[in-house]
Length: 316
Image (cartoon, rainbow, N blue to C red; front, side, top):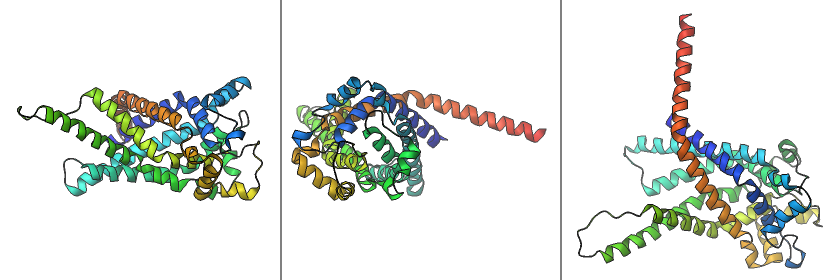
């Protein structure tokens, strides 16, 4: 019951945060997906994507693929939180420990993330293609997936699995920064009576945001490659079939970015990625915390109702 409550509240939180930030996510994804030489770029900055939607009277197209993204986001969050809660409980039962250590926690999180990615990758690929389609020309989920082969639905799976290491990098950065701050406090209070040291709520929030930024910066080239691999083909691009296929591989995407945009091209759209990631994480956790108790009460009520109904049916 606890795993289901955690999974449900996490999934609802993810659903709401995805919907609220979706226009920003669409602009970011379309901007990241464009791989062209500087003098041929359609989008010079993120605002150009937004202006294109406004000038062509396709503002609602900023929400193209929202349904698919929400389905993917809901399923991903449910599977992740359920898997994390399940693996964590399993570890504690098998090990006999009362609490889970840092290393074990990272392994459990990575295992839950990997399982989630493998199951939801076709939805992730479809939502990326729908977002990066020309405004007003996005297709439905089934049509988007049926255009290619089954293996193409798993485009970018390797990079997606690699990106499950992002939380591990974030936690390591957070831990290192936290230790330095606490060490500084201890040196200032030398001679005073020793007491347990802890970060203030504000310091923890700032360190959490900084560590998330560090993790995003380190993994961003992989994020950019993933978007490039999964993006829809633009009508403006004049590429032969072999070039298009080569760009759908990791090595091909890396080469295309390097050739056309240089080293800085691997970090194109980084500021938008950080903004979206930090806002999304904050919204998700805030909403999840607010509805976890309500979800738990509802699940208990449903369970009790089903039990009473079953009892009445047996008596009758």
